[in-house]
Image (cartoon, rainbow, N blue to C red; front, side):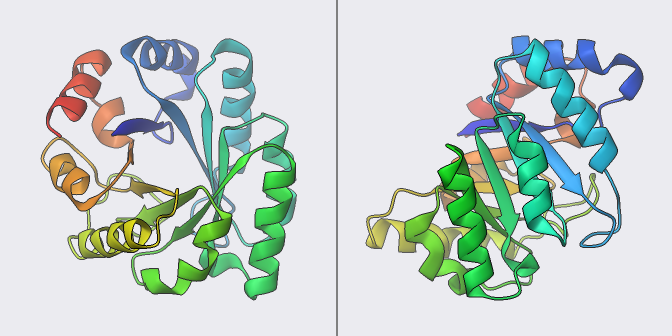
Length: 220
């Protein structure tokens, strides 16, 4: 299990020190939650662009970009300049299969890994046909758009079904989970088959990042 720290709740006034502290604490990725105020209610474009600029110059920790936007391709292009490890797009944002495959191909052509994210109400079976073309599936375990929500228990079955399908088809696809993750439920997510856990409020609000990350990994 790897930890991707969502920086959505990082305070702007001391963000550089926080990023440094998270890096030295051992986070595997910085999770960049890009919201346009249309696909989801909140708008974080300006803040996430600013944070990505900082991170691109001060850290070697890879960026894990999650686009929660309607007009996807321009955002892929604007965040590609930060050379992220991966860019994840939402299945629900695509008008059709062809558009989604176009995004996938564009991201891969630019030497970046690609992920597909689905909301809690979307059936995981809807994206099975795209799995041979991508690197990651990001299962939203809360409704996308804001931090601090409680994990929706039903999403764990979705993760378990996805893991069984990936193994049955012998695919090389990571499962990432995002939303309401903490030390109380991370072992359940690991058992279900999660490879990467996105942790935000629980980690950022803790007193000791290193101990919290260690605890998250030990409890698996």
